[in-house]
Image (cartoon, rainbow, N blue to C red; front, side):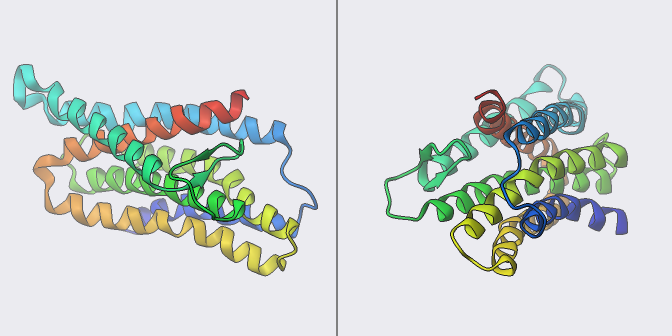
Length: 232
């Protein structure tokens, strides 16, 4: 159980460390370093999405015979659709300053925080469902695979934490307060992980759908956010 608690907190630590950059750096994280971290994290998240989420989903559905692919395919598409819906209905702004969602009068920093929080939800769910599968013992998931996914998300969260705290500091807000807002944006992740673990553990028969749902959500984040950020 201690391994599970540590695992679901790793991404939160990544966000918190990024937010703490406000105490060390005078300027924002360099674009080059940001792209390197984003690219590395995207690679880890793509690999983990298959090996730690989709493959176990397919293996857990092997008893369905010719329809073994259905839970993984359906869950994946639902995960993509869920994130697409959140992107459409939630006003937010990515690092490239492109605004998304309905028109609004929110401040730029508020939109950045919403963007980080928005994508922390599926990442927390992904970590939660992987550890739920590992704890159940019925989805071929190893503790190493779950840890790899958590670490990949934590690396991606590091610049996101700084993206929240550094602009707020540039606007004159006290360092401790900007750090608090950066940390706050990451709290949704362990909460989403715990809720997912509790939900998945009560409906083990549909675990393949949960695993594939998390994979779809993760891949949406990689394709819609991470790849554009590291290639612009």
